[in-house]
Image (cartoon, rainbow over all chains, first blue to last red):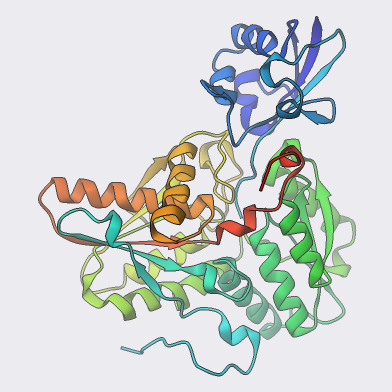
Length: 90
Length: 313
């Protein structure tokens, strides 16, 4: 499944500044695995051994994947994932 | 030395800002080192940001930059917005805030309760996106707004120089050996450090930053990946330490469970940094007194965010 992933400003050092990158996978987990091959280091910023990190949020469309099937959420062609981190400074 | 005491009767809500207590954290102390947290959540707006906002308001009114026909506008990740809103209501000035749309619902609701208007910026761009957004608004209509820009406004750190830093010295006197706190706008660090460095005996001042750009310590800045606040001067303090998000969150959990101290994640990270520093001093056989800041209360993070809507509270 070919999908797009929107990258927050704080992770764009890993995507050469790109706000959106392409990924492939039948599930969110598979897409993140594939994304980590093209953009090494991104997966460890998002997930730990318990799943999506407690201060990170990954949306499929408008829905947090925690409320779908988490990392096992199935993807279809054209889906869009959005990564939203916590808020910094001031 | 002047004693800073909270008066039993207040003439104005502004007079309730500052003179916060220091809480000794005995449960976290290693042998020979004391640890204190300055309880900034006891300010009327519920956070350390009341101090900077009060100084910004008072200085801007005194010099004539802020008048009643202007709207005070600034970008904020939340607590400064609450403080501006409280002061705006108390002093009779209109306030508009630019915040990333993913700030907690509590922050949105609290600021609106004071009559503040909120403009939302792109959540994907974080607090730097909010800074760029407010600059565009002000450039389009400069006469309409007073834009204090908390990141570049010397009143921000002056509030801490005159208040926080002076109070710490008054309350602990010669006892304090180390100060450590996280960087957001850097106002607390810059103001307190300037005051502590004037003390006759050297006091080591350390800044704390999140360990990673993609962190979850709301309110703090990872400087290397952020717009560095113009008021931030790295040469003032003695060094920088980093704290992982998980260590900060775990410390917040521990503080509420074991000490009854319910603070936000940035305060958890501050207290973790203070404890780690105290431990390293103790391991070297040294004695000392480490002071840090409890920036805000944990309940400010309670309101279910969108992604928490099915959580059981």
